[in-house]
Image 1 (cartoon, one colour):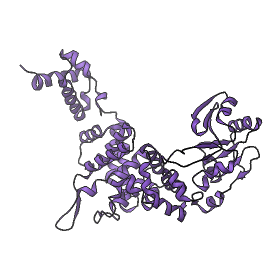
Image 2: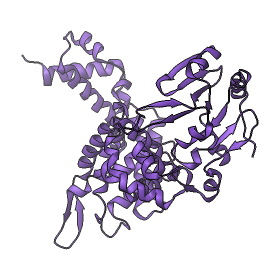
Image 3: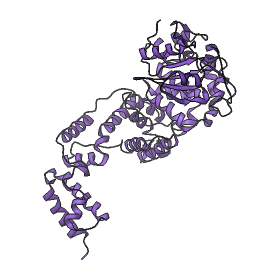
Image 4: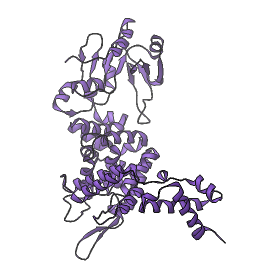
Length: 452
């Protein structure tokens, strides 16, 4: 198979080749082209030393100079170029204690994690170099560690999660000896930074079926160290309406949202994570989980904070988890629907509806026709199209207008007045004019807030 090489990458390689150095395309770019997948990043391996590479190219960033990696900036792309190297022991379970430059692509490939990632393409001849028969493993859809899997995972325990991630992304199985070594080295994942674990977790959640990646984490013994709160949900039954325990239901729920809705997928995975702590069995063996959405929000916040997610993402995901138990009735007035939109936030509505559909899917692993939810969606869409007032920023007046009109200073009273105006226009959007709202504010301040 002839790999597709972008023109700018070919030009970069020719600069190295023209000065007498080797240039190999390595890693995921080779693997993904062999799998006919879209390539995200193109990485080059060479025998040129880092300082030499920096002299050969005009625009270079020393992104990992200590480990032989620099980034060459082209007009439309950037390429990481790494010097062939061999490595010693990994005392910190991530970085080699000593890096030595090598003149051999074979030695460079030997230090990599899995056979499918250790195939190189000679950018001079176009020939593939595959010393560990990674192409056979690609054909057989197998994840196999290079050499002794125990050594590979002891060098960098994150590779155990990467195996689960590749399995989920590519729909590959994990070779038995590799799987056994993952189980033995699972406790070592505690030495890995939360940020690196988070990045792999997010990639698992963006795979075709996140449930398959989470199951691999469980089978490898990693889940109890990474997500103990989710692991605790195994075996928690849910009653007649559910075909699965809380753990399995959560996994299948996370499969429903589309791949680009990773935040909703994470919310679906954690939306019931508080059930293990809130389960109550009644006198007739009925199972209830009173207030589980609050406990689930608490656990989700703890997990995402522990994994160093950005605060904005934490707030969005935990907000979805907290509000996933909403209960709509056809008897709701338009004002009640507007209040719901205002309470959960217009920007969260579609994600919350998607989370509810994911929750329903996870009950039996089947898409369910939900007339009530469909009706609610239609009513929400209708009100949003009418552009009725749904948040404070939509009011015809703001805090400054109220302070000027009533001649009062900034104080908590301004917030109370704005809240009253918001409630007023949620009931009757026609009142959202500057003149009417200032008059209502004046009366509210005079009758409810002013001190004579």
